[in-house]
Image 1 (cartoon, rainbow, N blue to C red):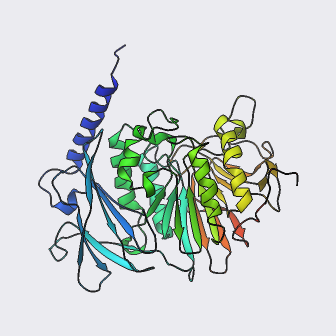
Image 2 (cartoon, rainbow, N blue to C red; image 1 turned 135 degrees about the vertical axis):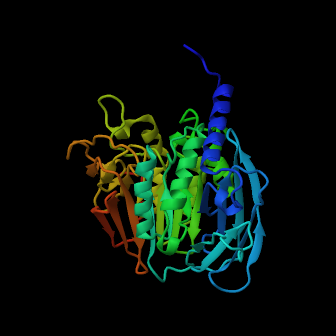
Image 3 (cartoon, helix red, strand yellow; image 1 turned 90 degrees about the vertical axis):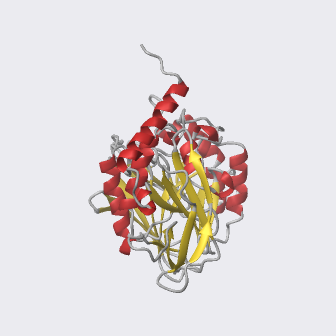
Length: 428
């Protein structure tokens, strides 16, 4: 058997990335047509900032955008950063805009004169500072077993025209190695996940095991080069929070892939959730589930796997102590809605709601029969995403939507968050 060294494997992956990109984007095209993927993220306030990211294979094109309020006024110019994404030769450019107006449409062009013939003009909308209109987002994870599967679901997300997407890991299934899969993923998101009028939909991202060489390294960000290289993360970490005015906070966590579950991350989590007690809506998201559907030790529940137990012990009491709206989990390639759970028991009045389990664009796995697993209220082997609507009156609607656009499960929330449990370790 021929043994391929890690260095040789990385070189081969980088070479394949170059060849595929050259086939798709031959030399001599205009700069705006050379972009493999254009995508939006936030590393600061979503109401007044936006980070514009794009990827190509040309090291000498500028990291510059021109932008303005859509259809109004003079174009402004902003430059940003540029780096080569090793082990590939993909070139990543990131331009952060700040001082924007909340809930406002902006248009931008990459590099070129916006008045030049054939220039591609893109646009986005900032988030509102106050919840004076419904705010909607889509969420899910485990995105791309095949390009065809992710295309269908990305297009479904775009049809829903959400304000943003909250994505729970395992994006390109590249395992920290295969740049060609990231090219497919970026092309799909850029072309298919567009709102009305071609609007680009911003992303908030949590890391999954298939972003990482070795899948569960616990403290080695170096082994997830594409995830850390493509996305400008708040504080440069895989765990962080995003705050949308005084109405919504997202808690993004790393379920043991490049950060340990217990330790600095859990210590940060306790402070981050406590600091957001006044937020109307609060959603944690991470990849590997505390209450899964399919994976588990032989003869035991999926919730009895090692990572699940760590999350139940280190993170869930924090959610119970402060109250959350719902918890988004992924990884198991199924649809899941749990009963409400408190202290690892069903509690329909005070418990937390867990939704998952990561089946955006992947082949699904079998699920337990109804009633077989005590905490599962609804489980199906069905590809899906969640469409979340937050209303100004403090209520929310969460719809589960499959690849055909069918709403096959719903959750209506009259209360924006569960009631805090002051001492979840005590007998109740």
